[in-house]
Image (tube, rainbow, N blue to C red):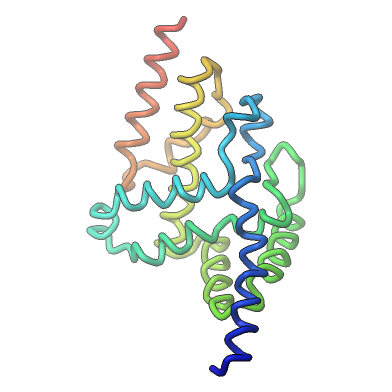
Length: 197
């Protein structure tokens, strides 16, 4: 690659990162909708960081289950990248799944289409969206586990009830690498709520 090609490649990376870095300051909509104070709401990037840390904490369990941990980490980091353009769409926004997918798919291509790793990022995103591989299923579970841990911390911090976030989660974690963590926070949450009552 000559100097001119290097310059263009670097410009494309910076242009892409200009979108991606916005994820550090875009709040997660679900928490705002649940009336968490604005100043305390995690960002989309904070969520991806939390997922990545969970994957590292559970690395031994994942490896023993035949999971490609490096791929899982990469997928966790890029899974919400499109939200830099379309925002964090939640079920309360009542956007059709097909419409949400189309908007996020276009946004994703707009963000990574010109960078050298763009095809790899797109491959990871498509895999995550399909949910068919072992790795994508792990990332989807970490997505929910990070959300529940954050909900658990918010409930403790603000003394509020976030029951809607916990609905129908048991089956997702049954016989998984993270079942014990899920059961721990669910049990402690119940005890905390019971003590407040």
